[in-house]
Amino acid sequence: MNVQLLDLDVQEFINVHLHHDIHAILLKGSPFRSISIHDLADQIESKKIAEKKLPSWFSNISVYYPKKIHLEQSSSEITAAYKAGLIEVTVCLI
Image (cartoon, rainbow, N blue to C red; front, side, top):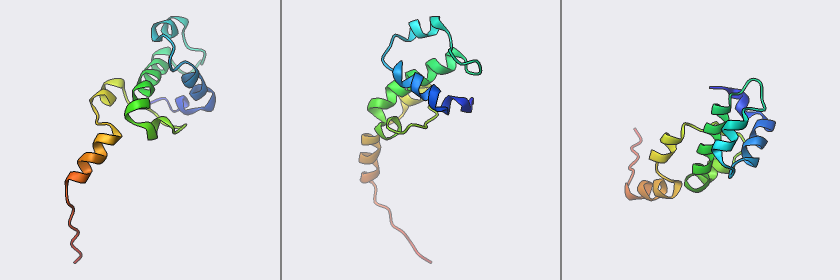
C-alpha cells in the first residue's frame, strides 16, 4: 500500500485522468517518482467504479481504493441499504 497515493497532487492527477483512456495513461508512465503507473491506473479504474456504486467514497478526497475486482464484486450503497432494511435487529440489554 503506497500511502503517497493519497497526496493531494496525486489525487488531482487521478481526478483529471478519471475518464481518459487507461491504456494511454499506462503508456505515458507515472509523473510521480515514488508511485508506479500501475498503482495510479488501479486507483483510476477503481474510482471509476466507485463513481456509480459507492458515491460516498467517490465524493471523498482521501480514499485508497481496493483493486477494481473487489469493487466489481461488492454491492452498491443502494443495494447495501436495501439489504440492511430487510433484517430486523433486536437489541438485548443485560
